[in-house]
Length: 124
Image (cartoon, rainbow, N blue to C red; front, side, top):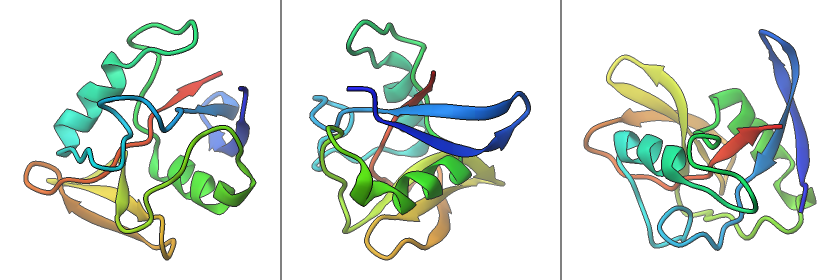
């Protein structure tokens, strides 16, 4: 399904984001948690519905905040784990920003030693 959200403006204007289906083995199952480096690799290697590896990525913190704000309106994308956060690609020194999908707050945690959930996106 094409579940599109509009995220904040990036260099080339408005960006459409297609959400990754949550039933993807090894990427977004709720029992799978990743360090930030492994989350980057998991998204880069992912393929689905006619897409190939290299088309998917971790969302920016702004994209992830937008996904959170619209999560109740999104259909066909599977469930979101609410007891923890999701990685973004946005870095802060040796940390990376996350969004907690239970309360909606943003925070940063260590990229190399903390593990979190993953929600991959791709530009459309």
